[in-house]
Length: 174
Image (cartoon, rainbow, N blue to C red; front, side, top):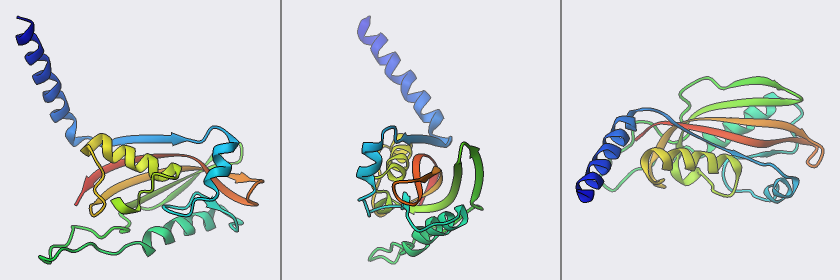
């Protein structure tokens, strides 16, 4: 009888997971202490989170857009198959919202290649977590339709702007 109950639970959970496979998944990462923030200022791989010479939030948005547009190498295989959209392809308008207390929320919409999601910074971790939650793993050659929101603050440490937290949603993959 216990064996049948376990089988029933497994099927019920599998059915719930199958039903949830069509919804968007989000994940977020927060930086909560200055030691982590200082450590991340030396990380250069992945989407930028330190904007040292930016004098306005528009310059921050431009640097984020430039990162994705400059990493838009379309993956191709030996068979000549190309994805629906190249990594770095923007699918929505980016927005900036004043979050109060000197914080800005910068939202970006891009097809992000799995290899561009760095686990060593707050944005990449949020993107990877969203993809892993929805698809089980991140494939480096696959592009994912992502919405990423970064909370950006002025930073006295860098004389510019810095991302203090990020939230990511994944909608599709190629």
